[in-house]
Image (cartoon, rainbow, N blue to C red):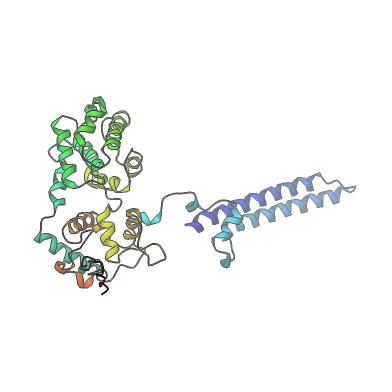
Amino acid sequence: MSSMIFIPTARVFNALNLRMYATRSSRKSLNLRSDSTSEAANGASESENRVSLRQKRLKQEDLKPVELDPSRGINAHKEMCGLPDIEECSSYKKTNGSPLSSRPPENWEKVLDGIRRMKSSEKPPVDTIECDRTGSFLPPKERRFYVLIGTLLSSQTKDHITGAAVERLHQNGLLTPEAIDKADESTIKELIYPVGFYTRKATNVKKVAKICLTKYDGDIPRSLEELLSLPGVGPKIAHLVLHIAWNDVQGICVDTHVHRICNRLGWVSKPGTKQKTSSPEETRVALQQWLPKEEWVAINFLLVGFGQTICTPLRPRCGTCSISELCPSAFKEIPRASSKSKKPIKSKKV
């Protein structure tokens, strides 16, 4: 990308400098006086010839590629043009895109197939909750707002608590931006309790409703950047809302389950290291480097269900997991049975 931007820019600067030099030289030659008329004529003729030669060289210079010292790399372009690299001016990371740039982990397809088979034999809590959260019984515009509010409340909250809170809002007619904007914040806080951080979320729900009314005519934003600008909306919520509300896949939705399981499987690491990723956002970026885009939507629901039933945060059920032989972390987090510590009995002195 850098060569495409900076080389043409360098040619433009070179061309401008040559034109300025040619113009100054021609004006200087025309102002020269001579005692002999023939010498003046010859001087004018020579000046015109020089201008003509410079114009020819100028045209050739425009077509001639700029040769740079390859050992200096992209810094040569920066020094020539005096401009910063476009990647330094942008906060967008190439890793957010779909092109694969890292080697996939060994046996990752076998692992996913094994998780799918285990999921089909059990019914994790996420399945029923996610079906309710889509709001498929509502008109499109109301359904999208329903999805946004439900997803906003779900952060750091168990699914059954989120589902109950959304249902209470719905029963009280408070799942439209107009109704929430008119309602008291204290009423919203009482209805969504006991979701995590319910006081802050009640404030954010009011703000989101106001923004949707004034800026989006009662609808919700449909771009990732606009969703991320809403109060309380982070990357996980934004990507999930895009998936469900707009059917737009721009990234993987990574929550604590996906973050934990991908690190246990050794699927992700910090750039240039073998260390585990330290946040869901780091996991998302690393996972998108190699996971095919057709798996981006399914991976969240698949790993969330797997994390709720088998690969749990504490005491994972490695003994019942069918992919334990492919997992580098299998049986390593199971706590050993510890006996109660007893104080040593001191023998009485006789």
